[in-house]
Length: 267
Image (cartoon, rainbow, N blue to C red; front, side, top):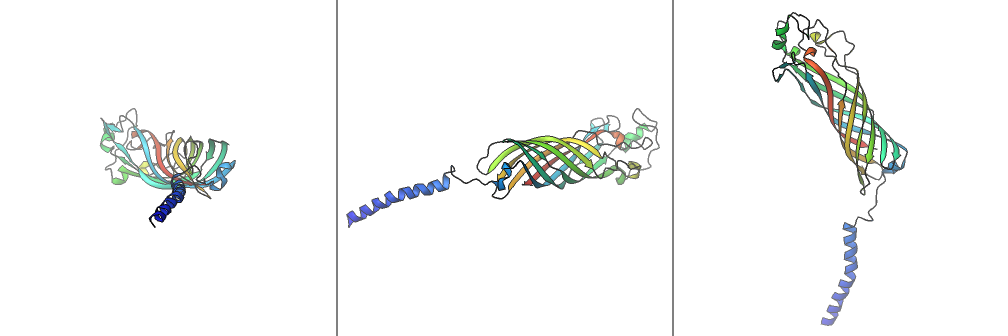
């Protein structure tokens, strides 16, 4: 009986070893892991998709040293806000590692500009190199000091994407390119200005974009989370009329949007 038990144990170890090895390979071996093809997206010359974006838009301000600053204190400040956007993706495959992308989208933005310029500007009622003589406002209300700037941008970025080799069902990439942006709420053509509580910006804008992300492959589609930065290159500020008191736009030399986005792409 004892000999039969020993023989049985030896047989179990002998047969179990290949089974254990196979189980180990199935769990930890990655060499033969199946790769998803995302519906063959990467093999196509042209492909498409869509994206959703969570945005943080702000203004980069360069202030007038006389009207926009009091010593080292900034008299105009920008408060960023979170918003959302969505768009389409068009891709053209150039090489195995290089794609050309066009990703037109729509972004809804609201920012707040605060002007603490009343007392400083009133020093120059007789005029200066930056303003004509003016009659001061009797008071500076909250409506005067806080300007809510609403923007709706049609954003058309053209991006060159460079990606690395696939690591099973993921692939890192980096992209950069240029943007053409149209602000549908710019008020550029308005005959009113900040004296009538109308803040004006340029309708047509240009910028550049940089992006980093990782593409994840599923059987039917490709999902890509990415971080994107977009930076305007033109001055968006439309000046108030010359006869308007210099509490607002004369205090700003240049004003350029900058945005940071979390983008979720589906292709």
